[in-house]
Image (cartoon, rainbow, N blue to C red; front, side, top):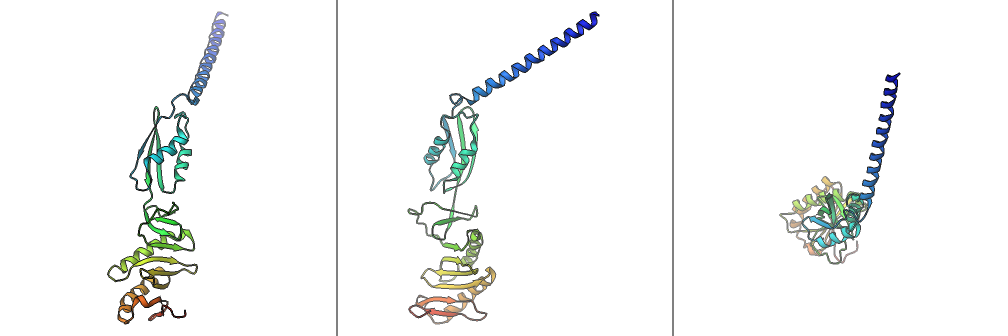
Length: 246
């Protein structure tokens, strides 16, 4: 009988102890969550920015970060919101963000590097293989202008432009524009305004360009008098002079 009383007593004590522990854990968790969710506790007070910039400024990035994060509890701060906000900036290519307790946001920002103009209002970044759309009003770098009827062809057009540029390195001609039209025909504009119609296919267009570079200087024609050269022939090419009917 005594053994049963002791056993029952130990059992009740264990239940009470477990209940007390559970209460303490739940209460502690509530207090911690309440502490961490309090905006007056662990507020964001500083921003550290790492990056080399030509078109962005650290002040501009810090201002954006401040609008999103200033005064918020750093422990509860959702960095995805800041990430998305910064990526909306046209010149921002990549962003890495981390928290440095107790009050600092650490940013590593990579700026877009423009390699070419794209269509009428964009720039192409060859490193990220992407198009971005900053304000071009005060942008005046002497870059080649590329374009296509669809933006997802930007990398193909850029790679083709690189091949064409290498082929023209030893010539007297300079490409200022390359466009891929809706029938996949490459159209090049030279520095003097003459257009070269190179046809379809990167490899075939390159062969036609090389044919032009070799043959045209021997034609006796002045390139400045030529409006366009149509190279879409197996042999030779057709020429349209400036001022003549097309």
